[in-house]
Length: 296
Image (cartoon, rainbow, N blue to C red; front, side, top):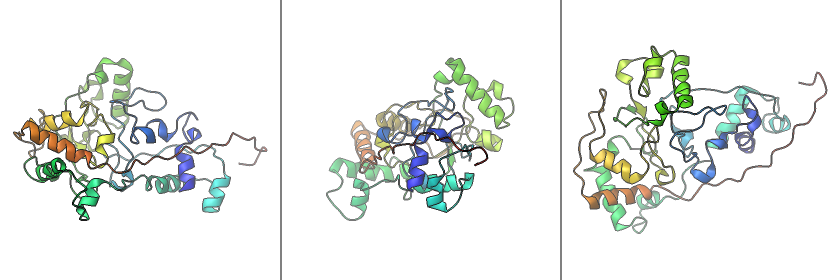
């Protein structure tokens, strides 16, 4: 775990030696970056929201579109690997170390968990009303269920496009190159994020994105795959309208008819899904040291 913590904050793990994991997944901003659209590697303007790493170790498939990806392995300080693995650094050992660290970035002592363990005072009366709405009238639990509060499936909701993706030429260039790299056909013509389709190339998957966990959700604004909804109030209002318009829209979404008080209760409940902040101090990183020629 300690080696994984070091690697997480080590910029020399990146291809240009200047980007560490915490650039986009900062403990101080809920293990995301607090932006609607993130800045990608190596400084490219990206077209999706950087999801929080809180509880990320427990997803079956990572990223909004379910793809899996790796990274290049540069030359690293080797004594930590010798201590952890009794061997040289390898790509597999790097993944193992970072994964061990990510398993420590988990929700802790959330009011909802104390409530489920029988603590009657853990939730306010308004949050309890929100829980009843979450499980009933609002229908949230249809997709946000289980320990992670995610069905880990993919749905099209009709989320409005973030106009910055197409208004910013640098971001739009990243968008087009990304889907061309995935082999998605006619990517230069896309005017919306195709989501899972970019991975599967199946028409039924166009616009579908993985259901995010709702744990710690009050700490991870803005919301949705493109950061287009700025607050939990905006998210609740979006679902109350029955979502947006989309040709593959999930049949689970229907107008809810929530009152103003019910919307407030839902937001109060969603706030109760956050526990103690998970703050980890950045380790002191060693300087580069010269190595004798031939000692690789």
